[in-house]
Image (cartoon, rainbow, N blue to C red; front, side):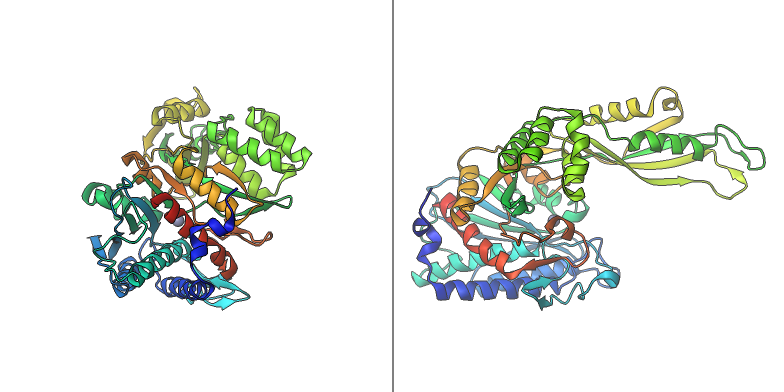
Length: 477
Ligand SMILES: [Zn+2]
């Protein structure tokens, strides 16, 4: 293991770290106070643009020359580049998104857009998804710029001392709704904002304490999404004379079949995840995870009573293609038998499952008796993606976490949801969910995502900044 004193971050003195942390927390609070909600709030539809402008102003304040694009009015993305000397190959990308999901304030104990600092936590929508990471990335940029200035250099033009690759900072709009006004547009119109030898992004590098062990999943893969609309056809009629082919009744049968968990499908990332986590856990849980890694359906059911419901639910979603029937529309009046019902089903597919395979699985589940009255329409398709859990960047991400937390158990992982990696991985940019935070053992981080009282602790951010700095220095050095 590398000595901590050998870390690039150890060259920065304690006062500079204190200042960097204060600025990081202030940056995050400033960004949370800009409600960059997606879908945009009609009363304030330009939240993402305002957030992009605020970040651009910070970058300009550092002497950089950021660029903003606004493919749809009010929907801004922002980008800046720090130069390396060009001898180290393709750039390194610090990726993030500006938008947040809405936050109805009713059940919050703090105003979701006030960025209150209480009990060592910053509260607010975006605290973990993902204004924390934007602030960490800007924190690293600030430190690099300070080093350039200390050497008498112009950070907008001159290579940053010690950087052999460029560092790209790209912060997108519209991640929470698929990226048409953000990452997908950038792929088409500003691909140089993404083109890199590797990228770090949200949802990974965050500690989860299980049975007293700190596990740090680094996201290497993510599931694809395949929502379908299913039109179920019955026969219209008078409610006084019930019919078997009432579309609402037929649709209910379809829904029941789709709600049954599908067969287990273990991908290579999950084998490695389950086997590594098993080595860190007590024998009883380890046994279940090891059997699950081998595809044992009994282990899948045993998860339910063994680990916390949230973990069980997440794990069970990661070992199968999932189908969640979430919308049912049928009927016009209580005394009219509906002749048509419309279902919408959220299907999430593992790396390796194609759209055609997902459709075939839906048809199999609906069954030959009901299939003739069902018309399946794909609403959209988001490819599952995967980056290698090996190679120089992976080694740096895992090794740097271990250097900063010698007890870290680092595992490659896959979240059940999608991120902007959907846009960067197909461009050939290995993209890792890595927004380093060391959390209190009791913090329910996963529940904060899109949840009530979203928050992040100042101490967790304090851990993250030197980790991210060292990753950038090591990969670009
Ligand atoms: Zn996010």
